[in-house]
Length: 257
Image (cartoon, rainbow, N blue to C red; front, top):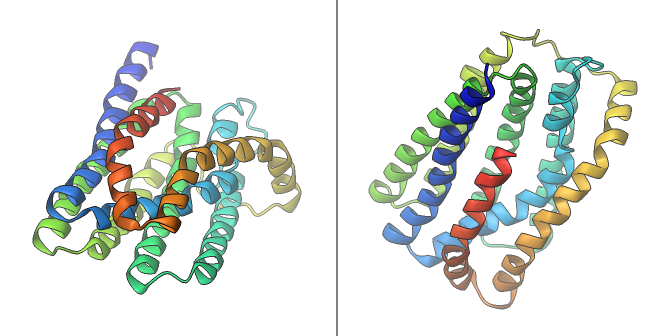
């Protein structure tokens, strides 16, 4: 498709996705309380750097692999391995942090949701390689609308952040299995290929990218760790609400690039 069409779809999809992420914070602050905002923010802050590192920027590597040196199955299988490893790391960290039950459940649900999102991200890399940004944006639009609907129901009617995070996890699973994998099948076979040699080469190639993204994520999230540790989740909630407009804009700009 033309650059104009792809750019238009990308603007639409990523704008709505950025809005849906802001809406989660808004609905938690409006109908919940600052502590819920803080707990949700903490879940994102703990999972993000680990997932950035283990994600290895495989989507970018795959999208620029015009010679198809590695198959889609190789990228997907490596992402499954690294994402599983990231989930183990998160559980180990939670064991030592000794949070209360609500925080642990929320962080685990958010982390699982993000892990599934990383699998969708690999399908986006394949689709981007063939310059069908409309399919990626349509997926993001559906995801965003479902997120807005489900988080509204969970907070306003059930008054539960745990239910909200559980619904977000179910949305991620649905999007990956029902939409993103189906779109990926239009361009490649969905056959996992666990090739240790290829995986090692991809890790060596991509690890510097993962490290850079992890450091960038830590730069954003270290203030959140400190506020949670020295103050409380309530103060973290206030901080998150204040800075979210900045980080939301950065999310949109990063997505466009």
